[in-house]
Picture 1: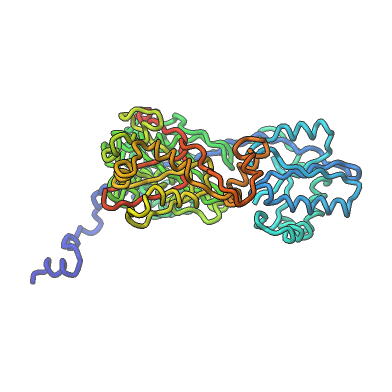
Picture 2: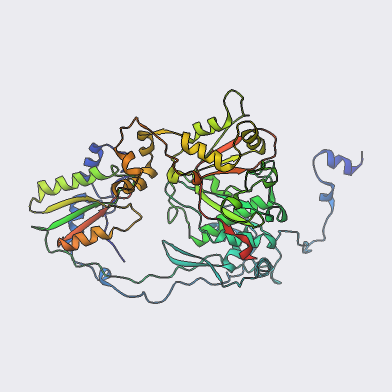
Length: 138
Length: 408
């Protein structure tokens, strides 16, 4: 049995026998990487895209205290109308028990978590609502 | 803008009221302090200097066009560390290779293909950036117009719900590029299907800056995102009267069109069609398992199934079959509203009084409704090699197709 046939039976390609001189640069095959310069290093193009920075807006001034204030508790309905509503009910119950002078109003948005609710915002402005807590994701 | 927030433990949705009570009585996951104390604090603590800053930030975030020269191995590692790949080896996008890819289109490298607004700031996906991703995935320049058309929909659907995508190619370009629409059309047996689908993943990860637990928050993830179910319709084997997808979407049959859909899952027929229970009825049964979000379903069937449905069961067009599904597939109200995506999105529509959601919301839970109420959202696509009468029922939904010929 010649050497070529033996290697074929062993599952090794006879082509594997072909030796290259030490230090030779292998020829580029389809899809292989060709060195870009004599140092053997490659210069790659950057796939990342810089994000444009957004304009910053300051937060509204905080309230000195919550006594006598009206706070909207706004459920954005992430996960459906029942997903987090009872969390809000518990928050409302906490205020009733621990800060009874605070008036809380529990509301759902008319859209979903991805949509604005300008009607709700207008309602809060018209009613001179002092603060709002918005949530809950998950 | 900095915001003040507290974090409840996960999950919130689906938990009983008693657990929600504990959450409110418990601690904020961010600060570790009592939850309600932190809520009150967030409303009353004076603003910090940082919270009062306004205007544009100084400087700008930039990305160099070229990366520092390095070895092949180091660059492969860098691309993985940056989460720019799918963790399979890539072709390093040298300038020469990207230039060659750009020869596949007449469009300028700096032309904006898509504007993306996600976490991390607005980004512009240019022709050149798409070419970089195409090189990385192993694409040929002749694929590039199709890849650019797909890029108009980048980044791919990405959601905590573990979303996936489907890419279907119609028109003569299928044959010109060697896309597979026959045997194994949806499997790893074709270069064009594989590489073009992969390119959408790579461009989406870079364009959307989709990094695990940073911007990408899919709870389970979706394995279909590796290739995005990229295949072509077997237009040559459509039964007479069954229009190809491009024609159904309002294009000419000679138009090269790619359609990109979002969905989550597909269900296989598992075996051959049976005379005792026609395939469209079994498909309808399987559709009940879908959410019916957007009234959407896409049925991908072997040409042999399409032939049966036309010749034996009398569906002369795809549209007739879609109508049948729309009129016959039923779910209970409880099951329909029991899906989180439906509950999240369509409840809001019901509250606004929009039909049929407002009426469905009022019905008892065991009432049967026909949730696939828009037959135009039920797509029928023919692919496969006529090996077996098998099919997939999927929940992928499509909007308009994209004309590939605009990107040559």
